[in-house]
Amino acid sequence: MNMTFKEKSTWLSLFVTLLIFGNYAISVFTMDPSMLNPEEMIELAMDNLSSAVLYMIIIEVIFQSLIAAASRNKTELEGDERDRTISLTSNNSGYYVLSIGVVITIGQLILPHAFGIGAFVEERTSIIPLFEMHMLLFSLILSEIVRFAHQIYLYRKDAV
Image 1 (cartoon, rainbow, N blue to C red):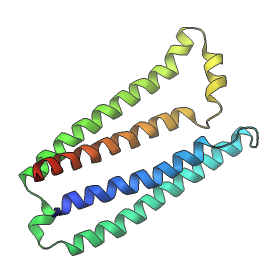
Image 2: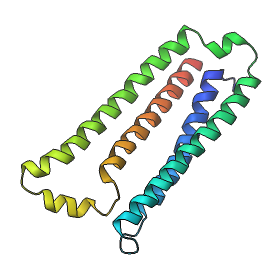
Image 3: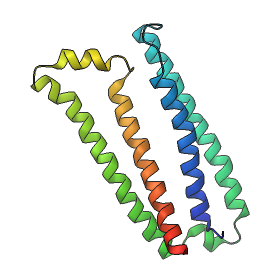
Image 4: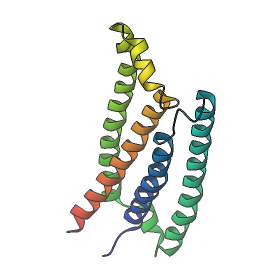
């Protein structure tokens, strides 16, 4: 299977994102609120997040550099019109997912108070530390996954 630099780079980014933030999501959502007080849960969640971001940066820099070094020529690294079109199209689909996630998060913050059930919702969402931040982060990560997957789909569709 002959892939361009951009496609290899996209595959790597998708894999690293799924691996690192999948592990992060598991660590946050499996926290036991009965074992930790809210401040400890927030501190642990923030430690996990900073570790995930650091790992993401280190792994991406190392492996993207290796992929770039293995690429044959400069024009392949820069991409062509097809690469730009694929990137633009996939960015749009990722943007839609992120926009929906932000609207849902804002709705989750405002609507319970409008209907007078704010305390009920806060009681249920306090199980996950920094719930709103995690909803926004999940939206961001999901939008990146959609963007990478759509980009790969377009590369593979064009390759056939």
